[in-house]
Image (cartoon, rainbow over all chains, first blue to last red; front, side, top):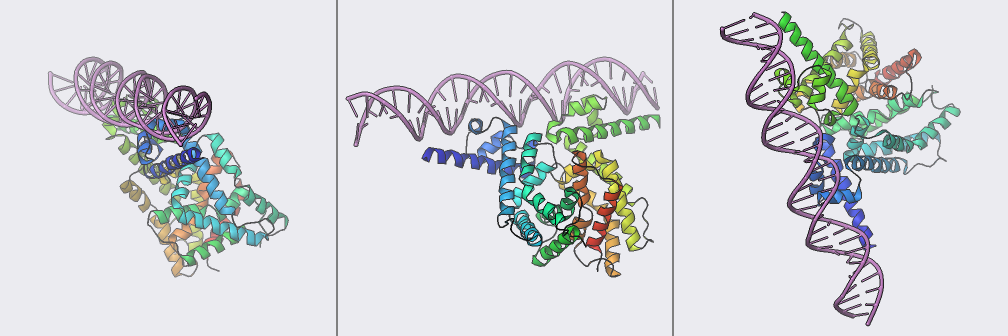
Length: 193
Length: 193
DNA sequence: AAAAAAAGAATGAACGTTCATTTTTATTGT
DNA sequence: ACAATAAAAATGAACGTTCATTCTTTTTTT
């Protein structure tokens, strides 16, 4: 028990270090030695927890993606109305992107570069299913535009990634009013007239 | 003249090779030797055209960003109405992202990772000025919502990046109808009611 | 023939990974 | 409860490879 606990701590430390270093330097410029140093571990120890560097970053990706979707769907239940469900999920996603921006930035980098291998990407996509289900229900009820889920996502959810990025760069600051504006924009772009 | 011409061809070949290899493998997994091979050039020759690897990727970024904005603003003049101007620009951007997807993907990767250094990123941002000017005009005329340009961009332009990515992955296909839908979404999210 | 451009081989540094060893933890016999 | 011993976890140094960059030589251009 104590021994297992210790192992999990070390694994978490390695994943945390990976996120921080990859965010700041990119995958190509983060040597295993630096990850080890930041996690207070010997380089060789990494290989007790992960097969190799690729495996480490794949597992980190899935870990963070899981956190993300748990966070997003935490307050949602499928007994909610479509409109309420969407609002709840959207605002949780906004929260995550703005409060857990280290994690969110890591995901953005993974989703826009070839550092994660295809199977791990697929694995990550599965976790968004509840949102897609909600949209299907909304379409059946005639509340949500009958268009591809990709278009819905592009217009309702993806803008948050851009805003997070801009905020991270210090380009501007998202306050409560702007979040509310953005939410209205999101809902307007998916609801049927 | 012939000599200069030859040099420009070689430079272009190097930039083209960089785009293709970085798209497929990421910056960290594209050695200079492979770039040289794909451009039919010796590794040493790269250093006649660029200071080092970082300089090569910075210059490539600025090159592609310049192409992008020239393409976007090609049919736009500031004598157009705000609405028409926006439509023209938006549709050119959509065209670029869908037809020149190699270039667009390279930009997406650069904008979501730390591979490009800050001065070069700043340099790239400048080129979007005409769109920001158009929005300012639209706000003064009361046609466009009075909100941060970042929010306008997030909801009107950025979704195209996501759609391009999805299309590139083969996840779905953007046809004329969907482009038109997307454009309406974009305009609705920025026009004042 | 001089200068510029290009090439290929060479170099040194950095990296991912492994190996031999030590340290820590768990198990057993008394 | 405690040594003795086995197993597991962790380490630092070392290895082989790869890579960006440079050096020397050859080719092309002026």
